[in-house]
Image (tube, rainbow, N blue to C red; front, top):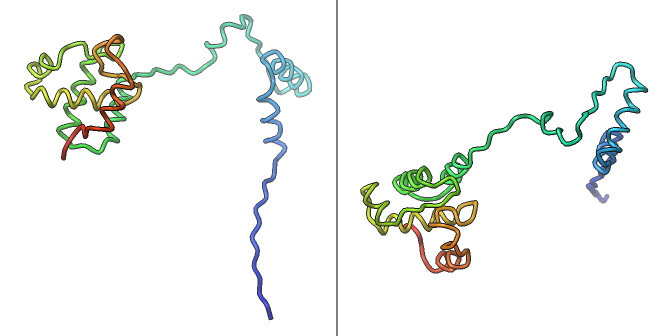
Length: 159
């Protein structure tokens, strides 16, 4: 007596999934026409066309994005000491609106009462976060290849 067991996987495309995929291929005008047709077929549906096609953003949910919050979240994922995270958090709050640390390392060390080397290491670590180049002194001093090579040769923090 021989006992066999087989396992198969099948993917079923439901009617709703097929319709959703089809809707994704529609242009704005095609989608508007499709919705108008469906509202004519079903009296319970109501369709309000956007008069000004450029003003579709008023229908989108309001979202506020604070890039500093995103950077603080990235800091939470780093495998570094609490003190190092605190130094980086202070540097994040010192960034200009364009994401640059325009002060020199010596100025930052004096203001925050820490060693210059610690500021330099923190700046390098900050520049490795997204968006790339964050924490550089300005657009003219940022070179992504320079900091990639530094990261390959240097450990930014020692535990």
